[in-house]
Length: 58
Image 1 (tube, rainbow, N blue to C red):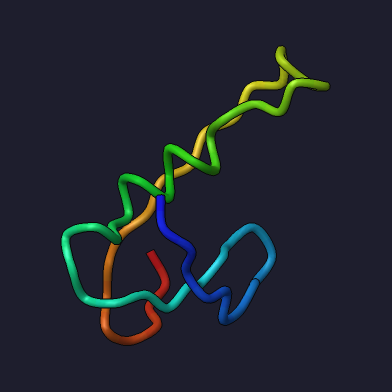
Image 2: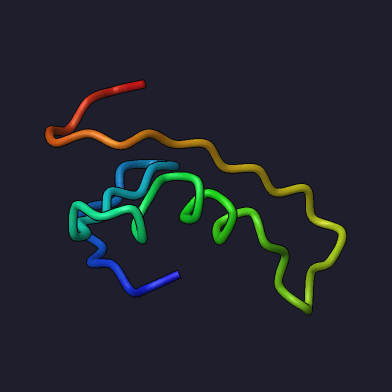
């Protein structure tokens, strides 16, 4: 996944800013955030998300 700009974190949320293209999407970011690090292979990770032009609470 290409690099995006981290704009804001709110509790368990991350808000990023990225170009409006198909290369940048919520599914790719969710997959990245759900990937276990080598040092913690058994931690259950899950991430969901959505794309929006303005901040909203899901």
